[in-house]
Amino acid sequence: MRSRKTETSAPGSRGYGPDSPVIRTFGWLRRFLETAPDTDLGTHAANSNALLLANHLLHLLEGCGMLNGMGYHSAAVTLFRPMEDALDTYAAVALVRGCAEKWENGKLKASDAARAWVPMHANMFVCRDKALSDYRKTLRSTFNAYSHCSRRVCLWNLYLNVKKEDPTTGKLRGTLDLNTKPLIVDRNAHAIDAFETAHLLEFLAILDKAYSRCLRDYSGTEELKILVEQVQQIMEQHDRHRCQEVRIPPEIARIED
Image 1 (spheres, rainbow, N blue to C red):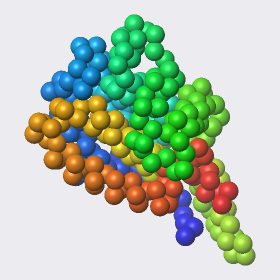
Image 2: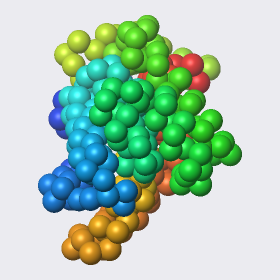
Image 3: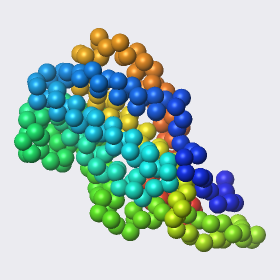
């Protein structure tokens, strides 16, 4: 149902609380990484470099959420492509023998990393009728524009300041205002949260595969299984409404509907 009002909130007033499965999963990841777990590959290069990348990816996810929760939506979406690059690199280093050494020596780009790990684990994710390779390629391509200061990224800083509704057509009338305060643009923030949730689940799937031996004996493994199930339930709700669609800022799409 079309909202008839301006949809903004004060910075810090929305988002996941401490009881959220997403926030609790971030905490679980920090505790797990603090144990310096060994990958199934077991080499020093794989163990140490996978740990570096996992920590970096976790920081990107949390940093994106912090920016989003303060209303810095364009800044948050500029992290989407680095998040995808980090995920591909992490997967290759943690899952494919020899990739850790290449990355350590500056000889593994994110695109090479994707080509290295995806063919070996094509059934890891459900990709909406797309092969995993096409899915990963589409994500990197989609978010490339967000990494190069295109106009598209700056559109995330606009919100519809609703003045009235046309009594005949029902079309909302108002102005597109620049989010300078900043405010949380509710629809944009929700979409970024949904995308992050999807990305977190992919991160967890790779981690589960990369550390399967270590997780058998880790005291927090049962907790992780519960958290993954809870995060998946959140994602299913997002997925039913395509909330994680972030190619166009939802606030702009609201006007075009």
